[in-house]
Image 1 (cartoon, protein in one colour):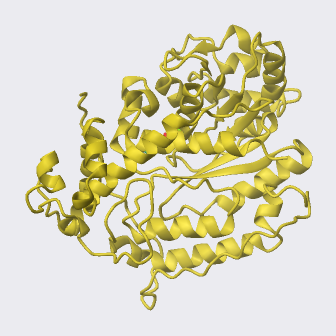
Image 2 (spheres, helix red, strand yellow):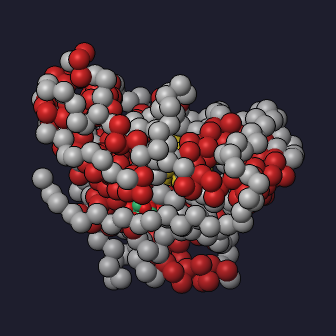
Length: 442
Ligand code: ADP
Ligand code: MG
C-alpha cells in the first residue's frame, strides 16, 4: 500500500458571535418557489432557485449561521458513519470514538481486524476520523463481507462502517450506468476557493469514464490542478485551453488522453491562462469563445462524447462566464463548513444574469456537498439547510472528508483509480451514478 504523509489542517471558525445563542437551531430556509420570473418551468433556474425573496432569506440564514456557529465549532457529535448521516435517534456523544466499540469482547471487530487503540479526546476527533476511514479502507475485500455478515459484531461502529462500504461496493458493481442521448455539459462552479470544484470535476469525470462514458474535462483554472489530477502534461509550453480561447486553435489538436481511464480526455490549462482574463476583455464575442470551440469539437468528434465537465477558477470573471455560456448545466460543490452559504446568493444571481442575457438554457441541475464530516453538528446543519433550500438539486450522498481523496492528485491520479473502493471513491462513484440516472433536466 502507498503511504503518504497526511496534511491535516485545523479549521478556523471565526465570525461574529452572539453570546445569547447557545443552540445550533438555524431558522429553516423556506423551500424554493416552484416558479421564477425568468423561467417558471425550469426548477433549476437560478432565479427560481433563489426566488423573489430568496436572497433576503438566504442572508437571514447566513446571519443565523454566523450567530450560532461558535457553539457548533466546539460541539463534536455522534459516531461517524462513512458517507451517511447518523439516525436522528442516535445520541450525539462528546468524544464519541471512546464509545466506538473498538475495545470489545473476544470475537469483536476489534480483535478480528486488530483495530488500533481507541480513546481519543474530542480535540483530535478530526484526526481519528481520517485514521478510522483509512483503516476501514485497508480492510481486504475478502474480510469485509465476512465481517458484514456476522450478526454478533454488526453492532459496533467499525463493523457498521465496513458493512456499509461492502453494500455500497456491491450495489455499484451491479449497476450499469445509463448513457445520455445528448452530450451533457457541466460547469463546476463556486467562486470560493478550496470547496472541492477540481476534486469533484476530476472524480466525477473519472467515475463516469470508468462506467463506460466518453468524458472531456476542460481545465479552465490557470492553476491546472485538474490537469495534474488527470495525469496530463500542462507545463508552460504545452498547448492548452489558452490557445483555444485566445487563438482559436481547434480543441481536437490540443486535447490529451488521460491515462486514468479509457474514454477520459482533458483539455489542459497552463499558467498562460492567468493572462487570458485580461486579454479577453477587448476581444470580439468574448463570452462565447469557449462555447464556439467546444460545439465545433463535439460536432466533429469521430465518436460522441457523453459528458463535458468544465473546472472553473475561484472567481466570477470572464473565464467563468465563458464556462457558463458553454454549458447546459451548473454543478455547485458546497463545502459543509462555516461560510458555506456565503456567496451562494451572489453565484446564483450571476447565473441568473447569464441565463437572461447569454445562455437561456443554463440550469443549476446539481449541488454536491463536499468534505462532509457527519460527526459535527455544523456539517449536519449546513447540509440540512442546503437540502431544505435546494431539495431537487442536492445529490443524496455527500462526499466525506477523506485522506485518500486529497492525496490522490499527488500521484497524478483521481481517487477513482488510486483507491477505487475507499469511502471517498465510493461516494464520488455514487454521485456520478446518480447524475447519470437523473439524466439532463428538461
Ligand atoms: P477548489 O477547486 O474548489 O479550489 P479543490 O478541489 O482543489 O478545491 O480542493 C481543495 C483542497 O481540498 C485540495 O487540497 C483537495 O485535495 C482537498 N479536498 C477536496 N475534497 C476533499 C475531501 N472530500 N476530503 C479531503 N480533502 C479534500
Ligand atoms: Mg480548483
